[in-house]
Figure 1 (cartoon, rainbow, N blue to C red):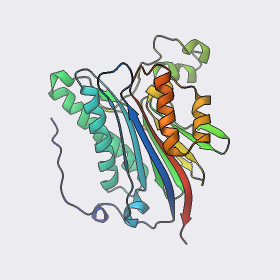
Figure 2 (figure 1 turned 45 degrees about the vertical axis):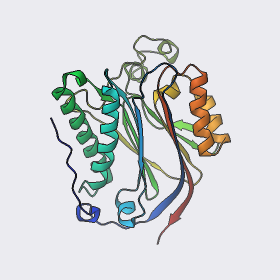
Figure 3 (figure 1 turned 180 degrees about the horizontal axis):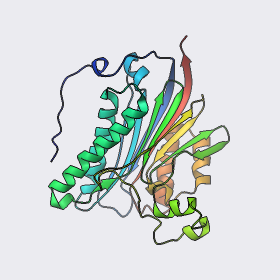
Figure 4 (figure 1 turned 180 degrees about the vertical axis):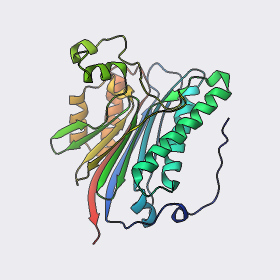
Length: 275
């Protein structure tokens, strides 16, 4: 079993120095709820915003949502370990390229959760989704494993930036199923990728341009299962991040609350650029 080791070190000693070319000033709101059915919350959210320019230049601001799975509270443990490990390894990895540090952070989280699951029989097979947003200079990076999601509202248009790693979603992309056929398919929630269930996992890492006024939503599938995209769009567009977060979770509860629901809303208020 892997042991969690912490030590005092300076980030600048590990991460190559880089220039801060742009800084996104943001408003952030978070909300999580047990739901109406579950006895414990297997969702986890974390975020890290440094005031150190060296960290901001090399690693930016980090936001994470995880949705754990596994009996006997194992899903809660998997999501906790993954969120913390991903952020810690990403921030302190020596790779100059942020994408390399992101992949390394996913690999480290996967290895940690997998090893714990193998070592403790009651936690065997536990795992979690991982959806992470990194705001670095004038770019937004998404890191994706599983079926939690990241959306972006830009002006009047909302787009899903991540792909679900489910059997049904991959069948749709391959033309094997229509969206109508997939709606009530028995494999709708069967994951094809998760952190910690296998010895290795591949994450999708994508980069997007960043604009003032963008609103990003990270959410677990407890929201998606009960709230349609059109309603998500309306709430993000109409309300301040804090109220939007509460209303989104409230809508999931009103829709049935069959699962834990977690949201992070990140609004790009201003992008400060440096010459």
